Length: 97
Ligand SMILES: [Zn+2]
Image (cartoon, rainbow, N blue to C red; front, side, top):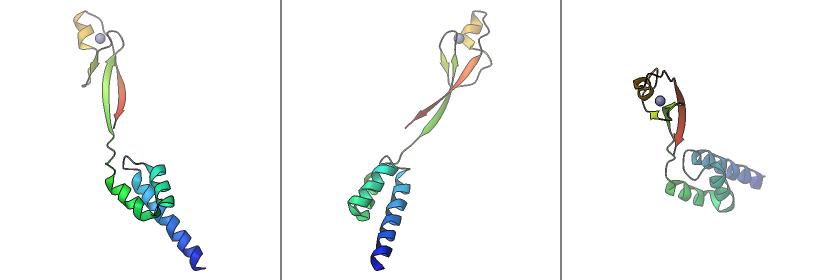
């Protein structure tokens, strides 16, 4: 009985550490396997060593006519507007880590 409880606790701790690993560069799967096979104590060490995952979503506005990209929203592409063309900018979302 005690063994079963120990195994459940072991697995739960590993899952908790793996969930914490999702916000780090180590990630869920890697943290989970380290905790399972190398004990959760090793898992904690790896978790502490791993840097935070930083995901920034940047929206840029691209002109399909001249391929220029803008960081700010414009109704029409300013470069194309100078040439008398009304080219609508398309928002492009980019994720960077
Ligand atoms: Zn343009």
